[in-house]
Length: 223
Image 1 (cartoon, one colour):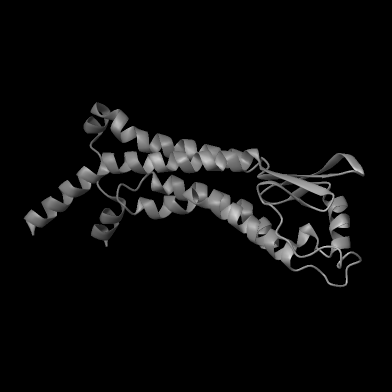
Image 2: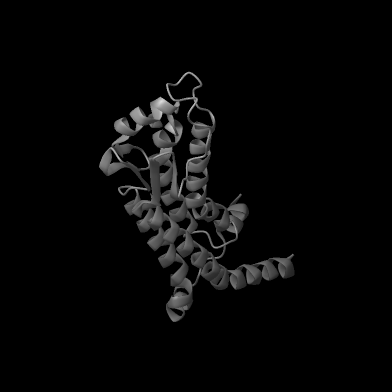
């Protein structure tokens, strides 16, 4: 059992060796720390913005999405969407908003654990976090696509509007309404964290792969 644990966590670095090569062995952990801080900060920041422009709204309508909440002119936008048969925005991603904060906290714990693993198993803990921004945007697109392509045929303006796919990022619109969707600061920070994590994995491999190979060679020779 101890041997399996050692193989999972990998070789430990001699304190003298670590001090002599502090940059090599310290960089992966530092980058993982930076990524954790970025993710924690992103928890309190918006992940997505949408502005709806129309002649009757000179200042536009604005909606902001956090990991666990929707804020802004959601009721007014829902009122407009009701006429074309689109469901309430509050019905979208209900599960995602419920677990979003807990998932992010789990990501932070996974990165904390990855800092103590000096083998390739660290990749399994880091990769889900790397792809999180992409998954967020994909999930957002799929929900908007589902809502836009499944309009209520009994809606007052159902005959005037054909099913469509709202734009998740960028400029879109239908009829006299124009939407501008942009990533929020939280999503930008999470994307930066993904880039930092890729660098962390590269430095992790550079620092610990030679030690793993050395230990493997020692075990083979002993056997």
